[in-house]
Image (cartoon, rainbow, N blue to C red; front, side, top):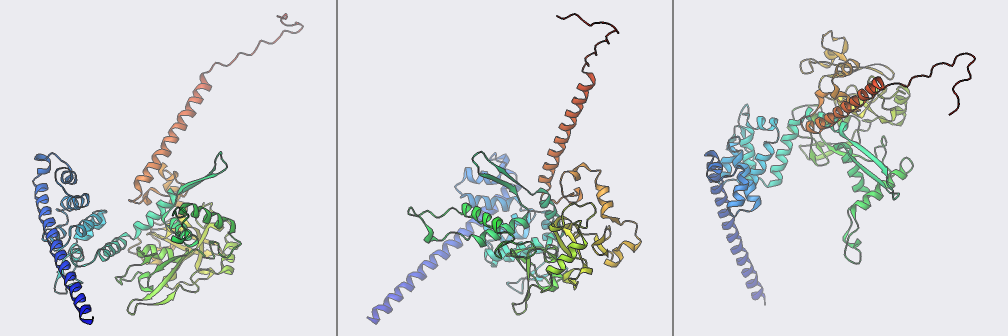
Length: 509
């Protein structure tokens, strides 16, 4: 019987090895064919044959219509061929067969998304960088390094590398994106004829993450044992609606409810203090599993529903879960609110004190203390604004601060940027608002978003909103002008002549 068992195991092992050899051979053949097809399509594109000989402007449509390629294969080959003149190192890795076309296609699509990514990818390193997969291979540019990931790394590692690259390039763009998102977000609640209420709107990325985190925590996805008699699981949107009801009903009374300054709903930010200070550590902050820029991390760690997890990257050990006094306690928060009853410290801002966040004038990550002398209350929008380049805050007394903007943030220290630095290009927050008030586009959004703060990502949406507001203003002006004309040119009824003294008036009709 033991002999039969050994024989069975040997047969199974031989069968598995045969299948492995067959699959390896087939995969190599498929990749070789894909590389040959890609080479031909690139040659066709460079000679413009897809237009002149085949009559197609889009390479993907040609491959799908005239040849029996799958949609995914045709799309990947067309994407690489379309960008072949930009990313030659990646194309060479695909044409040579060293890297699969799906890996390379994903890489070129990601790299072509923004001008910053394209420029950085093709800019040579100061000195060649060794491949993380083969120390003898030196990479002259980031593109060559990405080609190494396409050749040797699994897809998740390639995706992570490109996400970190995008996050490191984002910096102030992410902060401007956040300002634009806050200006575009909206919520409407309206009662319907049937007694139900309709909820519609759009949320900024930070607000959306907080809500999504709460809903997933309060209402996890249904389990298989929750199926009904027909095998149907409960509808998740309905569960989310109930979770929102519980959130609103229990707010302020239940310890389980989301709290603004009690930080019940929190996001996890993984970063080390050195990176948060702006030191070149080569590490990328991670928010809820996704890479973010250092600038975004510094803003979130300042005062938000975020717990920073500080790591020792040499040992992989979590050495701190948040700093004990990073955020003001209830007593300090109360003191700040009493000293700043009017709300946000930004000149002319009408947002109430309950909507404000405590801003560290000397940043928490730079050693700034969490005390009344180093804190000022700002609404979320203006808090985000002063984290962009050029802004400084000087506290002049309890609940009072001077906020200024300078055009030389990269060449002066914080002390030199202060109001008394003597430079000619500083302006207060009120000056900046007045200067931008002449641009009608700045009056579209209730936040007071400047046109110079419109991020490239959201510019189409912001433009559309501004155009619609301008159209409504023009229609209102036309209606007002018509009303004025009607008032001016409509004949007025004549007043009856006065009755002479002693007259009995007109006879009755």
